[in-house]
Structure formats: structure tokens, C-alpha cells
Length: 166
Image (cartoon, rainbow, N blue to C red):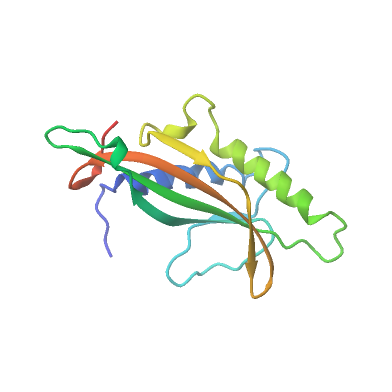
């Protein structure tokens, strides 16, 4: 599918989150260098490995409390992103899994909250954002890592998801 140059606001927010997480791959961000950041395709063409970040979208919801009247009116939306990290250290690694979780979560928080005053706007695309509590991820009955929910609230023109409304 060919995409136009214009992308919906929620896609631009997703791009900004992805870009912030990419800083963690270079190793210059802090205490832990992640192996990669991916946004899965339909075929999920990545191999889970220790330190891999997978960015996905969760639920989207309308937030009528922040709608704005006008011509055209603006509608409030809330999108939850899931920042999932595969944690699978070597069996010979004596480091407790909780230490990996704590360090990785701290590094992700630092990357997302890159400017304490304006991080939540994602370049003036959003109104607010909230990093939720870490969640344990299990797969096939075993431990797979952790996930951090990131809920972003934004407003767009009614009938036009490409146009940001502050």
C-alpha cells in the first residue's frame, strides 16, 4: 500500500514515541543498551531476544470531556501504547530478573520523558500523557518480560484525524 505524505495525528505520535525509544539502542542513553526497537508488521517478522523493545498500540477511546465546540468542532481521543521489552538473559547470568526490569524501565522512562516540561505533548501533537505501572508479560506459560503502558490524550478536528487541535 502506498501512503501519502500526510499521516494521522496518532501515527505521528507513534512515530515520536518510536524515535525516543530508538535513542536507547545506540547505547548512549544510559545504563543499558537495548538491542533494537520494532513496530511489528502483520507477520511479526522479528525474533524475540533479550533487550528487544516492541512498540504496539492498545485500546483507543473517545474522551468527550475534552471535546471543543467550534466550526469544525474538535474531538478528544485517548490512545494506549504498549512498550514491551523481552527479558531473557543467559542462563549463566547471575543478575536477578528484577534488576533487568528495574534498569530497563528506568531507561525507558528517561527516554520517553526526555524534557520534563513538554514530554507529554510529543511535539505539540498531544494534550497529555501518562506512563503506567510496569506489567509482567507471560508467553506460552512462561516469563517473557515486561510491558509499560503509555496513555496519550490528544484532540483532532472532527472528521479529520490528520489535523491536531490543541
